[in-house]
Image 1 (cartoon, rainbow, N blue to C red):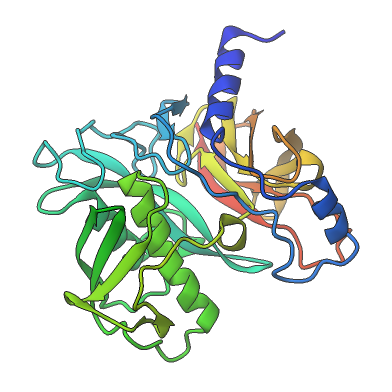
Image 2 (tube, rainbow, N blue to C red):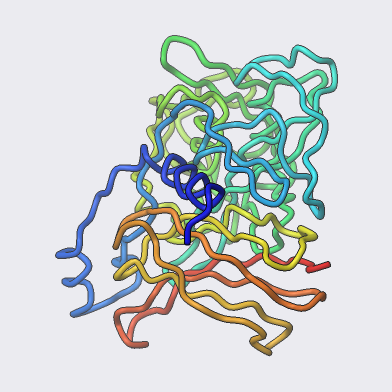
Length: 336
C-alpha cells in the first residue's frame, strides 16, 4: 500500500524531469535494435529547461531538478547539506562565504564515447560569482566521482563569466586557442559543450548561446573549434549520458533502506541495478522508469548489511550483447 511519503516522492521525481521533452519514441528504439553501432544509440537525456525550484530530498540530501541550482547541497562523503547561503544565479553571493551546491558538468566514458555527466559541487563563494566558480570546477576536473574528468589543459582558468542580453560570455585564460596535442576533435567539441551546459545550468535562463573570449578578446577558435560566433548547446541526446544517478551522491554514508533516484533513457523503461563489493553482486534488481526510451525518472530502495559498496545503475541493452554495451553510472557509498 502506498504511503503519503511514497506519493510525495513519486510526485517530486515526476516534477524533476517534467520539463524534459522526449526526442525519440519506441519506433526509433526498435529501429536501433536491428543494428546498433557506436554513436547511433541516441537514447540520451533530452534537453532540460529551467523550472521553478523543486527540491528532491532523500536521506537528508537536497537536490534540484536537472539544471536547477540549489542554495545548499551535499558535500562529498556526507548525507548532510552544508550551511545554506543565498545566491543570485550567475551573480555575487549576498553572504561573503555562503556554502552553495553548484551544478557542474564533467566528461565520463561510455561505450558510445565520452558523454556529459553532472554533479553538484559544494563551493564557498568569496570574490567570485557562482558561474565562474562552477566553470572553474568544470575545468579542474575535481569531481567527487572518480569516473568523471575534464580534458581541458591544466593551466586553463576563467577570467569572468557574465549573462546579458540573452547571451552568456565566458572569458578564458590559458593556452586554449589551439587543440592540444593528443586531444581528439570529438573531445574538444565535448569540452566546449561541458562549459556551455555548466554556465547555462547556473545562469538558469534556458539555453542562451555562449560567446567565448580568450583574455578579453574575441577568438576565431577555442581548442581548435570555431568560436568566432556564439555557440549553442548541442542536443542533449548527442552529448549527455543515458543514465544519471542523482541520489545518493558519491561517497555518501547511508542507512539501509535508502532510496536511489535518477533519470534514465532505457529500452522498455527497464533500469537494471546492482549493489557490489568488488566483483561480488550483493543485491540486484530492476527499476521501471516513468517512460520508455526517453529521459525519465526512476527510483528504488536498497536494503543491505553495513559495509562499503559500489552502486551501479545502467540502461537495458536491446541488442542482446551485440552492440557497444550498456551505459551506466556508479557511486561508491557506505551503508552504516
